[in-house]
Image 1 (cartoon, rainbow, N blue to C red):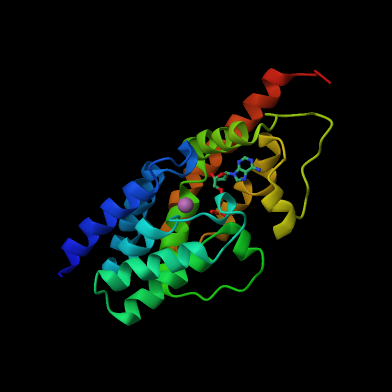
Image 2 (tube, rainbow, N blue to C red):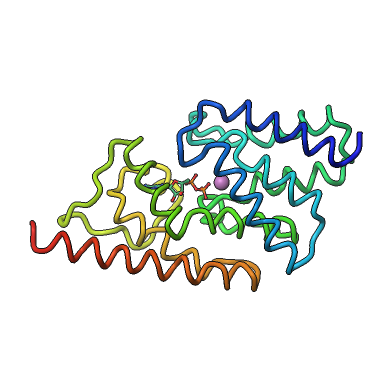
Length: 217
Ligand code: ADP
Ligand code: NI
């Protein structure tokens, strides 16, 4: 099978698998990440086929929605790519992307970076910040039944992986615990540039939020 045929099949597979995913993590998220990854790769280079497969498959089975099991996503992707006849070497790199892309795994500090991972991770992080990031954070908070904000609950300064996974924090706190940090965690120069505008927009949003909240305690 040629590369464009494999990519087409991957689109179909991901669309089907994520059919019932919540709005922050659905097929549209995948398409936005793919688009960001292509933009970054245009400037930074890297193997486009690997990058596209990694972007398409990176959230195929989020551990959050599989009782914390982090081995399901990589396994589903590997099985699928073997069936598509993808070369072993590329499969390994794509599986590596899926394993190490997430914020919570980066909290462990055990990343194994190739260029494709660096680019897809930047692309995924860009979709967590800016106007879209704000939208996704509130969708996630609503899904979990979290508050938007509680002036008595301060953000947890240093979040470890267990704390992060609980995800019970008010959504405004999540900006301090994760979203404002992402700009400085970007891997590529292009990713850094793209993050800046989105970061500044979130800052403005949170400032306006506090202004409107006023002194209510
Ligand atoms: P990652 O895949 O990088 O580990 P997640 O899957 O945890 O990221 O997050 C997916 C989306 O949900 C992101 O946009 C993230 O900002 C948002 N999110 C995660 N945890 C929370 C939270 N506690 N409150 C609000 N939004 C959250
Ligand atoms: Ni993602």
